[in-house]
Image 1: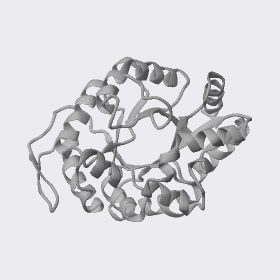
Image 2: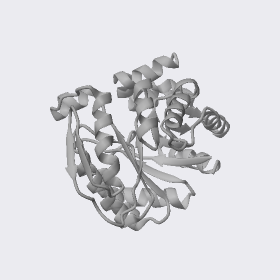
Image 3: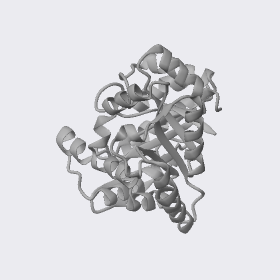
Length: 303
């Protein structure tokens, strides 16, 4: 089982020094990958990962995810290949639309035609990551640029795709997807078959399915659920994640979290892999040092 650590959706935002120490701990514990989000506050994910990668060898590093509406794809490609030129071929570039309230109310951009926006974004991003010139004029954006950075490895592009249209587009134009608040039934019935079929039709290799899940190892299930309901409350309100919870007939984010003892965590993670996950990236959300240590040990025992 390929298990990674996903730092950011729970708890405080870490500075660069803390991210380096955290990633080093994940690497020492044998985890396959380490992921950070691009938030409106805190450190820049790609810039931070360039420092993490210089300090921590071997472990895969990934963004989960960088919003596409707030920067041009040429600029994103430039930042990404700068990172790979520093740390080598172990960056996965996770990108996503974010959410209408965030893009329009916080950043002040229009959340116009999201599927079309992502298609045109990838039309520009992908060749630039491969150090190819781009000459593209679309309905929503354009991009014209020469080769980007010779010798820099191209990162895999993973898209935060949840619904059918986004999954089909991702299968045709990206290397895989990153999910969040998505259950096993949805993975098996929608996510995996949809993205794989689209990739097959486009003649692309099997897409990678990276599944983000909150995990807490504890014997106090009620307290764990209460904490999950508070920590992840926002995800039950954002429409795209709410739709994923509704597909599973779940009341709130606390219902999709993996909460329980070591055996429960093992069984639920195996169920995610059986449903089609290639990787699970775990968001640990212990409320104290004992829970954090126990959760980390439970995850590490599965490697």
